[in-house]
Length: 265
Image (cartoon, rainbow, N blue to C red):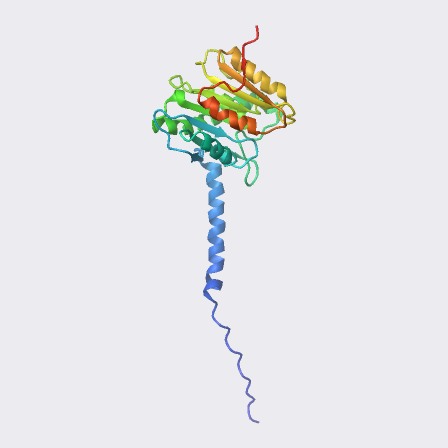
């Protein structure tokens, strides 16, 4: 018998460049993303974005702290809007050191109420010192302490108050802006005896996140400590409305933009 001949199948075509490199590119992207998040978890320094000119002698600086769960650059758009009205002011927008979810940030780690008395003072102090590293960046570039303000929204407003009260003895900040925040801890924050600052506290009447009385209590606390306090109350919920956005540039220029708060007898 003659042997039968079976044609061999043609070899498959070689993979294209796309087929060769796509898996590698995806692997690199995954590793880069993982490295970014790990660095965010482990790095002690706060990343921040700058809007406006570089800090320098004679120019004011406003450090803006976002609210709980917002992205680290949540207040960049606010800084850009304020910069249009105050082109000589430097705005520094850091990201909170603690992650809430994939994109959200916070200034304090998650805690249950029972931990507040044991952990909260230390956590506030730790975060305050990290924000002061951002302030020190402005100082090293030539900004004077009296020209540096720190402000924030919601949890960031509360933290801004804490940061302003926890600076070194040789650097009294020019002021603090608390937007829809509140809850400064009287037992741990040295409000009395601190160098005099200008303080602006803003709050909405229909705020269901941070109750209006907390904002009022914060304003009164600073007034009792001998600071120059202004109170700006607005109709609306938890937020930063146009009235507040328009008031901040004037406040930074030294103007009176709200009701002057005096210490209660």
